[in-house]
Image 1 (cartoon, rainbow, N blue to C red):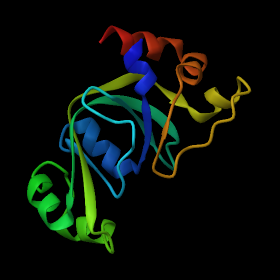
Image 2: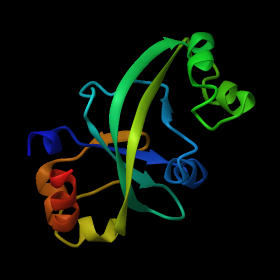
Image 3: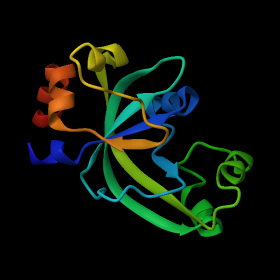
Length: 151
């Protein structure tokens, strides 16, 4: 279960989450890099308002942190965003982060926010990302923990 100790929950807008699920988007863009992330890290996909649930997961293949102009050249064909969307998101940033992945799974049932809260576990959806403990994940969805540990 070592890999589950490195689980990150990322908040993603529904339109971009749909692009990940469809396979069109194979790199997640961020303004800052999570500290504990590397090849093989599991990233749980939290789809923000109005969905408000964890719908799937992907495994990190690689991460790059580059000046935004260089990053665009690397991600323009895999990020499933327009140049305008990219520029708007990274406005004012000197560096950008690309989290590349190739393997995504859609959970049979989404994990709803109230699932975390019903077990007296204080859970607040992340603005960008947060680390998730095994205890949080196991208490909210043992089936997902089993699924992730088998892959």
